[in-house]
Image 1 (cartoon, helix red, strand yellow):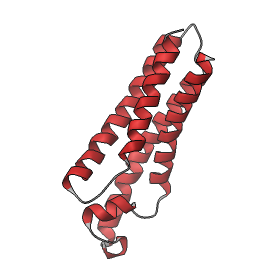
Image 2: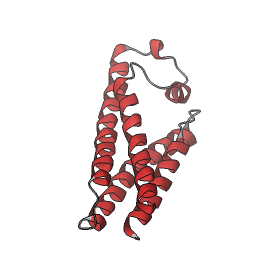
Image 3: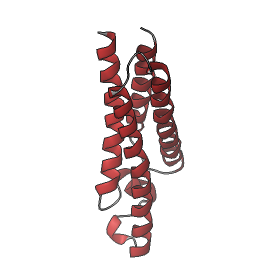
Image 4: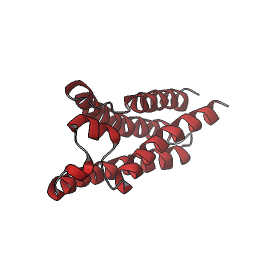
Length: 138
């Protein structure tokens, strides 16, 4: 039962990263909180600035998708022989993308009118931590 809960927590955290990455990869303009942060509509930005924003979103999406796949694949292949190192890589890779995203979102929240969805990052960190604990303590 403990392994099933660890799987669910870790898969859900990996899925958050995947979904975040896919949204940023396929979005054709910035998100609502981006609009609020710069107090400008997408259509009012010049083409070069739109291109720059989309390029940054695509770059971030690559990292999020890579980490999401890494988390899911490692959790799927977790077994007693490699449990500790795999669980550690899951935790570290998830924390890196989450902390960096949280830092960026905190900058936006504190310095602009934008309200990024920080709760999703906190949820991911909690799930990663719980999954790590359950993966390594049985």
